[in-house]
Every structure is written in structure tokens, then in C-alpha cells.
Length: 258
Image 1 (cartoon, rainbow, N blue to C red):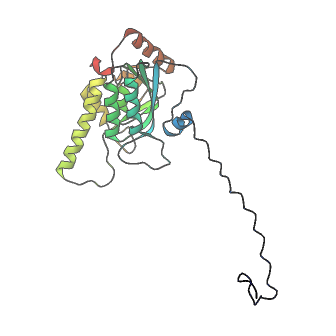
Image 2 (cartoon, helix red, strand yellow):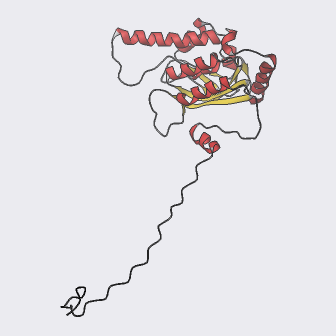
């Protein structure tokens, strides 16, 4: 009698049990090492310490278009105000930083974002020097004048024109009153922090015949100094030397001078 473990009716030509397949080794995925802080700063903020030199001067650049409440298309070169403002807060709190150099090459952008940056600069307790390279147009003008001393390159330009709106505009008196109030905010800030009168600024702002598709005025280098908008024609060396002089004298921030 066969044992219970053996079938009494074996199946003919039953294939043998296949040998176990060798266990495949798992595919190893090599993770990309995280980028260094210097690389991240270049990608996100456009800043890096080029040389290993501990300077008491911090540089902040305002380039391209100042981006505010609306995200601009990816092909636009932008400066995001939510990146600039935390930098200014950190500079204000860092005791190792004695002065700030602001380099501008901007076409303008969001009015409220530009004014926010300008108000932050003018309220700093440390001396600030601005340098306009290439262009400091539109809302870049208040940012340029929000400094203890402002420089402009000889070939740099600044465009002064009224505030413009894009998109849907409701044709009611309140819309025009709002535009007038916003325009007055910009004019008042520039007049308070530059050596130009309100009458002259309004004349330049509403001048016709100089711009092809707009009203306003383009000022090149010495012209911006001549009307009192910018303090001096100069470049990087002059701006750094003047800032070092302000630091040595213990000069206060821009807001304490007006």
C-alpha cells in the first residue's frame, strides 16, 4: 500500500520541477548630489561670491523686469521682489555688512513692487549707493534715487513716463482717480529723494514728441545728472569708493538724510 504522500496514479511524462531562477540584483539608481549653495544662488538669485574675499559691502542687482504680483513669461529676464526684500532684511541685520551697493539695469515693471523695493532701500540704517548701468527705466527711477548717493554710467539711459496699465480697464472716474494717486506716489517719492523739482519732473514725464509711441523723456548719462535726477556720472570704481567713504564716515542710511 503506497504511503499517503505518494499519488497512486502518477502522471506520465510529467516535467521535472524547474530549478529556481537566480535572484536578479536590484537596479541601483545613483542620486544626483545636491547642488552647492553657490550654484543655487546663481540659479535662483543670480548672486554668488566670485572671490573668496570677505567684504563689508554687499551688492544687490536689479536687472530685467521687476516682477510683482503677476508671474511674467519664462523668456523674460526678471527680478522678483520676493527675492530682493528678504536679502535687504538680512543685510540690515548682518553686523558684518557695513554698506550696500545697488546695481540697476532694468526696464521697469510692477509699480508697487518697485516702490516696495525703493521704500526698503530708503529705510535702511546703513549707507546705500546706487549705480545705473545700461538702463534704469520707469519704476526703476525710484529705486535708483533711493540711495545716499546715485551714479549713472555715461552711456546709461533712464526713461521717465507716466504710469501705464495693461489688461481690462473700467472706464469710470474712480479708475482715473486711482491712476492719479498712484502717479502722485511715484512723483512724491522721486522728488523727496532726488534733487529735481516736482514741476520739472512732471514736465519731463508728460513731454510729447520724444518717444515714438508714448509720452515721456529719455535721459542719457549727463542729462540725468543735469536735471538733478542722479547725483553723479560714474562707474563701478567711483561707486565703490564713495560707499567706502560713507562707511568710514559712519554715514546713516538714505532715509536719515531727507
